[in-house]
Each structure stands twice: as C-alpha cells, then as structure tokens.
Amino acid sequence: DAGITQSPRHKVTETGTPVTLRCHQTENHRYMYWYRQDPGHGLRLIHYSYGVKDTDKGEVSDGYSVSRSKTEDFLLTLESATSSQTSVYFCAISALDWGSYEQYFGPGTRLTVT
Amino acid sequence: AQSVSQHNHHVILSEAASLELGCNYSYGGTVNLFWYVQYPGQHLQLLLKYFSGDPLVKGIKGFEAEFIKSKFSFNLRKPSVQWSDTAEYFCAVRGNQAGTALIFGKGTTLSVSS
Image: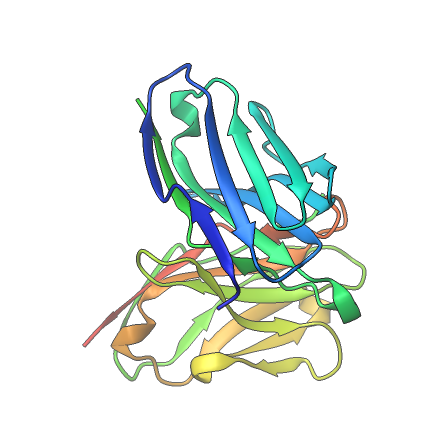
C-alpha cells in the first residue's frame, strides 16, 4: 500500500465549528486530492493540489478550503461545518511520472457533523 | 462534461457465478480508465487500469476488463466470484476538466453468498 495516512480517522463535530483534516504521504508524489464519498454519489472531487502552494477547486468545493505548505501534507478545512458535510473523506495521491495517472487512496476520515 | 455511468447499483451472486459489471463513459478523446474496489470498511484499491494497447486488461485477483471504444464501455469481468469479492466496485475515467483528477461512477455493490 502507498504510504498515505489520514488524521483523524473519525471525528464528530458540531454545526458551525471549523474542522481540519490532514493527509500525509511518504511517497513524495506531486499530486494530491481530496474526495468525499456519499452513498449514491460515488466519490466526488473537492480540491486537488499539483504542487506546494498550488491548488485548484474540484466539483464540490463550496464550504471547503485546502492548503499545501509541504509536499507531504495536504490539509482540508471545513470553515464552518454543516450537516451536509457529514461524509467519508478520502485523500489520494498520484505520481503522474511516465504518464501514470492512477491514484492511490488513504484510509479515509469519517466525519459526522451534528 | 465527462461522466461515468455504472448500470448496476447492487448485484447479488452465488459463489462460482460469473460476474460482469457495466461501465460507460462520455468522452470522445483518448481516455484512461480504471476499476477500483472498496472492501467493507477499507479504502479504495486499484483493480486494473487501461491506458493504451491491448483492450483486454487483466488485473489483480482474477479480474479483467475490456475496453470497447465504439461503445464507450469498460466492463469488469470475473469468471468465477468468491465470497471474498463482496465489495463495492467503482469505475473511473481520467477527466480533462479538473487537471489529473479522476471522475468516478456511483459504484456497484457486489454481494456474494457462499
């Protein structure tokens, strides 16, 4: 398995509070992604990063921000959590060297917003 | 916009039965296609991928998929399923709108009874 960890693995928080999820990789891959997984929706891209301090929005970016100050860390922040953000969040990485587009996923963070 | 359709939401099979999960995508250009599997409580793992060349792709655990360009399809097959194949299966295509991010189908849940 690729060296990807996510923290925390589980979190319960209250509506309106800020939440930060962390993704850490040991593979030195350039590309990192945040997805959310919801029943009936598959995985949807929130934000992605193509290098340190280089990020862009995905399909469902409203209410989320990201930061990447180091190659190995990609943070996802819910600025003011809402119940609609209850989900499982997966981080993924991709090397893109030699045209390799597959992504490798972390173990996920289950977030519940009450 | 690119999209991926998985025709079967939930498939129920007995052990030793053959499996075929449908996947269609919408994009007329060169595609990179993937199948991922998610075992209960685990993260997504890459089953197989197609980039170019032989349209019949073999992956791990006896799975294979056939890329049929004229039908925009990338169906997953396995001749004889096992109870341990019980999982959720996701088809994905590399999108050209969000950098290198993948666009996922909504997933197919496979339940195999022993």
